[in-house]
Length: 344
Image (tube, rainbow, N blue to C red; front, side, top):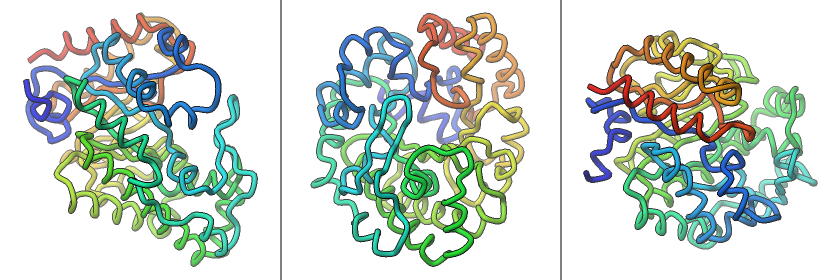
């Protein structure tokens, strides 16, 4: 079967499929012993710059789990790192910025991204994968709000106080930052698609930290611009994923993303009603169930499939990434279960 006619891409396009496609966010990573055996020391930002290594890590879960799509082994902070803003990924902490963004002058440190010059290793990995894969490749990057929160706060946070202060006290500075990060997102995703990726996902991990009014005025216009620009340039599915988004879902309809990914905090049928049934829906098993036992994961998956009732446009996934202590055999069996239960 041609990759373009795969069940994953057909589901993204809301077309009929032989069974529900499955892939897992963070399917390539510490849960796999083969990943731990080759990953080596150093930051993920170092590993990403080795195309042979990044290619192999991307392929590992496809071989083991039999998933219907591969997700590029990369990181949402690659673009900010590549233009020299001073981002590091600290083990056990996450993205750390020693000199956080605070004034308009900092935009000079966050120059526009030139993918062929700044992230050639990512594009080489994409090209390598398209020669190896029999399933679609999903490229990705971070969405502007989530990247902005790391750049402003300087590290992961639970309050987003500095980020919200910029949003409320200096909306002009905020919009300038969002425009620059939108350029990064467009350039990154467009380059991935031009080099062979079959679909892309925009990760907005922390978007649920803001309220609906803030989202509508200070974030959504930038997301609409990214998605619109990519759809103008490419005829490839676009997935938007955020966490804690139950209060925002009804406002995501106008983004015109082909697929909306949702976390586990809201029943998937209610989430689909809120974002509009013209979109595909992706999700939304609680990752902790996979780390608990196969029985817990299987029951959770069956509950989700029961809500969907074999409607076109569903992509089975977790409501966030695979947890590091998950038994890989659980995910192997879960893929088989979803395929078997949804076979048309």
